[in-house]
Length: 244
Image (cartoon, rainbow, N blue to C red; front, side, top):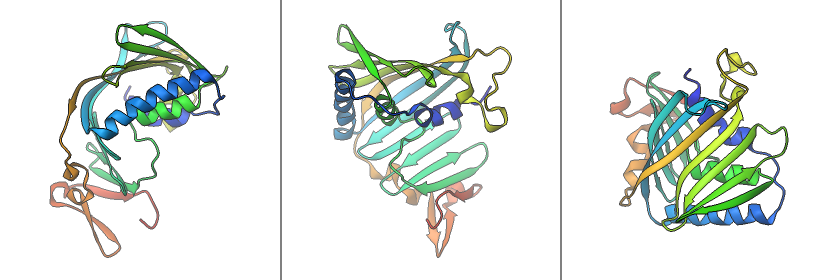
């Protein structure tokens, strides 16, 4: 089942609800902001591994997804499966490599498809409470959500010494990963709730390199028309923001 990338792309919006202002959530957000500040001060790259299973059988994987993410200030670039996303101060660019499609839009400052820091920022604002435990240098934050919410449970592990996010684990409704043609339907063999785990590893500080996020490497504008650069000559452009 290859709707897993759809789940990762839509997860922040799907789980966002109105937060209650509690001291525990404020503490969690404060820890998260220190982690986010670290990535903004020093450009970083890291690898990510997503796994998906039924809630009752977490050891039996039904799908998985690996990729790499680079963050440099407000610039972001990720490759997951055959989809690559580039975000800079002005544009969001998504390359759907199998379909040979380049999607262009204004950078709306919303969460990028697989940006774990932006996703966490959204999720924490939608939580009702959180609890904390500690394991050597790691802080484990268990986040609680309102009854009936799409997400049943979220666990976040942070290395509080290096200020790096190590993992996130969700238990959420399986219907969130269905495409429009299967919305609100759970296929045979899949339970009502799924467990999704994201592991982040192999962190490396990288030099500042604006060309990695420059839209000029992908397309240019000829009058009112957008045209691809020669490297992407077999791609079609789809403009997602009217009047871009």
